[in-house]
Length: 364
Image (cartoon, rainbow, N blue to C red; front, side, top):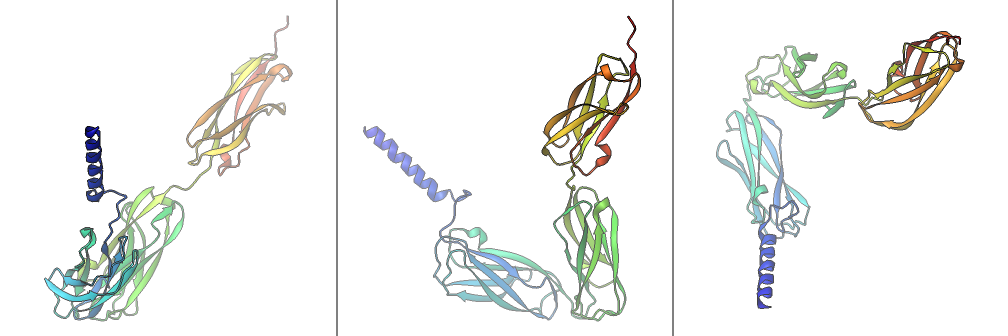
């Protein structure tokens, strides 16, 4: 009995340790967990600008946090602290709060700068206690035209025509008077979707959006990389182009076809002739409706028979066999036609014909 109790206690202890230390489980939610969920600022900055950097903190745990703690923002690239703030307000589970920092970029080097936000609250999940974001700083007196964003749906059905918006900004310190050409290319298929021009001057700090109409009828199925770039020779080539990915999917097609009809070359009048009809789903959608397949003697204007099939999965096929009693058939060449009654998007293959010769029965 003592041995059984001892084993039970050991089992309970192991289970308790598992609950305490197995925090990598998908179902585990930390009790105390303050996460830095976002860093928000403009991605392109002119040297000398004073910009606002917003830090969003979220209580991702299950308990309310009332303790005071600090949030710091630093420029990791230059090894300097931009600012520190104390958070003293209560933060309930799933609630968020945003703190803003003013960043003077007057003494910042040009190029890519990495900003790091972190907090000092000691919680149960250190993985989200900090967050990084990058910005590009350019010279105030330089010429710098940036392709800042490409906007379009993530997924497009092949054949649809969609608008692709490309945002362009004058990040430099000079007004631009020259015409700027922006090209949008499908790098995957190696095609140019279109070109647009910015004319009539482009003042420093201004932004504009150029829109392209993309007809995806000829685009290949799968993931595509679209790239937008300009032809202006500026002093910062790192932002002269930008890419994004989009997926082209197949259009939904319903297409039930009579793909084959087989009959003997000839049959003697009064005998039975077997005719096989193949029905195939050439579309990419399954069909679940009952479909009637009819075999007719076009020559004599007679319906031979009809059969039903209960739906057909995409790319599947089925073979129906008809027995034709030729007792009443006329002697000579006959055209047999098989057709179905399913309403699909391709009527050109809804029927198929074949020829058979009915010969006169020998006189006995």
